[in-house]
Length: 379
Image (cartoon, rainbow, N blue to C red; front, side, top):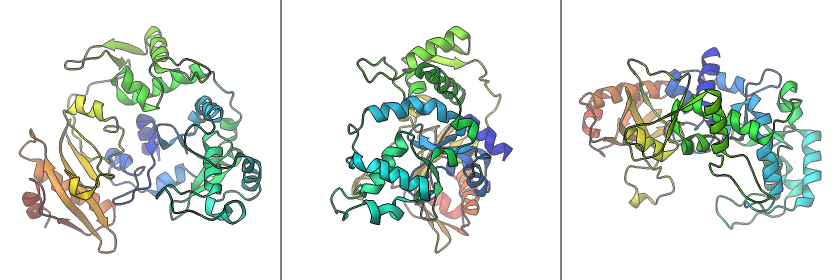
């Protein structure tokens, strides 16, 4: 658990996504950094109340974050409250008091458990997003901080409850920072996670504005926070060869003498989720193709970058066949400058990943330049 705590302190957040073709998105960044860990550790860290370490909120996108970030998200909660109706949810606001009362009385509850009482007939419009009235109201209450996520069911359904039963008392009762105080803390954490970054990278980590806002919906912006941290000495202005924009180096960042990494990265890993940064750092052009029609995909449905040392040297399209207990490698591709040992190292990593997922075999399809060698090396 101490290793998990240190890892989350470094990554800051663990993005949550429902796609489960290989493993849930929030599980993979810990595997990439810790190796084959026990996922029950993460379940423990995101459960209970007083001992809870992590809670879900809209930190990057929906993500698990340390509980002490909750007060620093209150400006975002109030911003969502002020912008009611501007970002897609159309549920009847008159339902909010009764839904909140039901959560307070019965929580933790799923939206499905409240549907019979609060939702009308479901429509088939907007495939994938035809949420019930109860779900839409609960999501709004979650965004504005009136309810929190207590956990998820075995079907990955969100279980909602009131914050005072989800979060440690010290967090619930913590004073609310000013929006700009929160901006400074969020940029500080983004800088620790990045080591070195442009201002836009620092802003993106917690999805903040980089330019000052105008008008009544003013929210904190990263540019002002960066200036505060530069003045305090926590950030140092830097120049990176090949980057066209100024960069900032965290004062505690260290350059290791050697990077011995060998791991696969989720499409939602903080190392690569900001695609422009991944390209600037690794010369790695990366786009997820989940929503691309199959005939138009270049690499595959769920493609993971392969990190070897301090370079991204390949990518693989993976799927877990849980019934057959097989890790399916549906495509395997080397980058243009991949070293000669890429196939051998990737084969070792695929075996390690399969073991962590409880899969017995690695099966390689004949697609991509690495596929022939991998097929031999994983037999």
